[in-house]
Every structure is written in structure tokens, then in C-alpha cells.
Image (cartoon, rainbow, N blue to C red; front, side, top):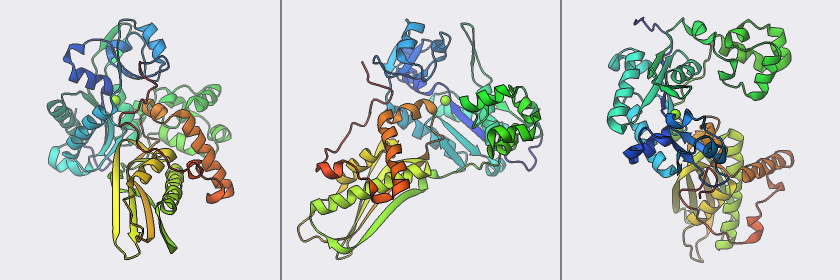
Length: 418
Ligand SMILES: [Mg+2]
């Protein structure tokens, strides 16, 4: 039944089904209907995605690959091909941009859309959701589920409910689209597990469980003072989410923004070693800024202004977004153009663009995107800097001399392959 959407926001969450596994099946149709498991296929790899036929055997994202092999001995285990997934993801975004520019990609296979402005052209929000499904099927031959609601949180929870489900060894087809009409938010949320809300991780879940809060409805009825005692300033936000209130906007065009740092030097720099040293400092500062903002980016740009004010910018776009100190350092150094002895440099700049919010990156990817240890190391470095100032710690490479640039475009993100 169609009801008027009135003046409330119209938010869609579009989520491609079993994305990596679906791409593998697209590229090799003989895999259709089989338990396909994508990830790091080596002994210490993890599952990045699994088809529904694999999920009926209990295979899940982020599960160690060894566990998945035991659970599903007949599975087809494939190592992930990030660059292929990124290429398909780009086409997914092109389809979405044919509906509205107001879309916010989350990882490779999800996006929020604010379709308020698209309604005149395409019809009601549920009609737009069908149109997205139709276009994604027609142009990518992939299945996408769409949740429709008045907030991002509701749309996200709705798209999950539109997915196929697994019960016992049977896959039940999903509805493809789930609509939560304005005014129906509380009815929709009440029976859901409180763990499905944003910001409720295992720790919060344990605290809530102790308070007797299991469902979102329980949370809505919980006493404010007890919530404040357990969650402090976060209590109010949790309560709002439980009531279906979430003013988080769809942030479109995240790709237009960048993080940058420029230095103009009191006296011109000469020679490769002096310039390389300064570029290393810029890389370091860029990594700190990206870490502080919680952003990762794909395009790395180096800007050089010579003493005669000639300005050169050179950039490189990676398949995998990063804010890794080492990657930034290697890439920026590789961008330094050949210099003649007379080229004095008065300004250097480094920037990171095509940004994404690393909180919003799919968990299965985020966990294995960076080598875990180097990520932990970077956190430590940033903590030291916050306490003792920018210059208090330098990358070891500044002491080691020249670095070897270049890493493969398809890094093993899910653990080593076989
Ligand atoms: Mg998905």
C-alpha cells in the first residue's frame, strides 16, 4: 500500500548481495548455485564473502578460512581479486548516480541515497528502490537489496531484512526491497535485537544485556538514568536511535574532499636527498591527519613549486584506499620528478583524496585491509605525536636512506593465498 511520504526525508540503502562471491559467479557462471567462498585461501586467511549456498553450512565473513574449510568441505575456495571488485563497484556507483547525485558509498557494495530530490523524476521512494534494482540487474547482472526509510539507520536495517535468508540448510529468497513508511519506525524497530543498532558493539551489548535490554523496544523503555550511568554521553544518542531518530545526513561527493599539507621553505631546497627528506615529513603528517579524521583515500598527490614559481603536480590512484604511513611515503617518493641540480624548490605539498570514511568501510574489508600489526604501530606513532608533538618521532625510513617503492596492485588483504 502506497502512502504519501510527506515531508520526511527519503533515504535508501542499497546493498549488493554477497558481493565478492557474486562477482566470481558472474565471471564464471559454472559456479552459480555452488558454495563459493572468497578470501585469503592460505592457512591463515579469512573469509571475505560467501555465497548463500556456503552460508547454509555456517560459513560467515571474517571466519578463519580453516574453519570454513572444515564447515564446508565441498566449498569452492577462491582468493579475492580486489581490483576486479573495485571496477564493478565503480559501475554500481554509475548506476546510482543515474538516479541521484546525493549518494554516499559505503565500502564497495553499499550506498546510502537521499532521494528527496529524485522523487519528481522517478516517483515515490519505493518506486525508486525498484528502479535501482532493475537498473543494477540490467547493467551489472547483479542482485541488490534496497531498504527504504526516513533515516540512514532505518534504511540500513530495512535492506538487511530484504535479503535472502538461511534457515537450516535452505536458502529462502528475500523480498529485495523493504519499506519502513514514515510513522512506522518504532513498530519496525521494536522487535529487533539491540545489537543491530549502530554503535552497539559486543561491549555495549554485554552492558545492555546486564540491564535486561535485549531488543530495541527494551532499549526505548529503559530508564534514562540507568542508561546514562552505563553509557554516559552516548546514552541520549542510543535512545534516539531506538526511537527511530537519526539526523545523520547522506554525505555525497566524499570524493571531492581531500586532506593536504603544504610547506613553503624559508630557503629553497636543492638536491634529491633534501627534497626526499621533506617529502617523507609530509607523508608522515598526511598519515597523522588522515588518522585523526578517520579517513582513508585512494589518490595521492605531490605538488612541487620551483623557485621560478613553476608548479608541478603528480598523482597516483591506488586500487585500495589507504592512510598507511609506509604506502604514502613510498608513493610520494616515487612521484618526485627528475630534478636538475639547479632546480630550487620553494614549496612542497602532499594530499590524499578520493576519501572514504574508514568507519563506514565494510567490516570484513576493514579488518584485513591493513596489515594488523602495521596498523597498531601507526596508532602508537600517532599517540606519541599527540602527546609529544609532530617532530617527536620520525619514520625509520628517514634514517634508513632510500626506500624501495612499489607494491602490487592486488595485495593479499585477507591473509596469504595458497
Ligand atoms: Mg553487500
